[in-house]
Image (cartoon, rainbow, N blue to C red; front, side, top):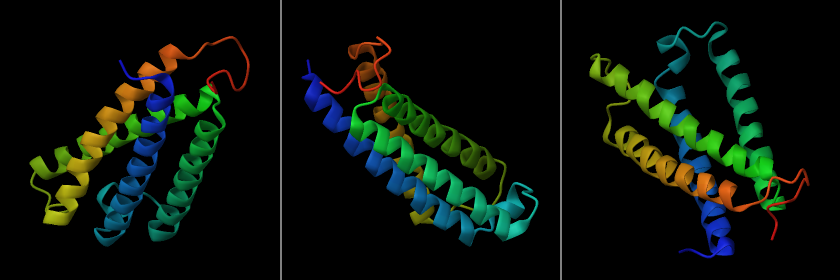
Length: 142
């Protein structure tokens, strides 16, 4: 059984890796003009605004994770879930015959997001179960 401190370190590293992969995917999404693919009104400007907010949310979640706050582990779980959702949505598009995200690098990023997200989600759940939910903001810090 992995020691709690090792588990927290693993979760932090997975969070960083998944964040980097998700940002890389969003760069790829800009290349493929994802706002048109999903019918996002406002074009590139809305796409950039939404991505700025998503990156900020990921960074705030990572800060909370580093502080040992229980909400940080919940954010880790949300990031993992977002990764799985992104892969599912893009896989459905690819299977429907859309040419977007079919370049080798695009596919590799999606596969890596899926793998890291599944592991990150499992580690986040295990960490959440191990830390007390006693109402203290930093109850997962030890």
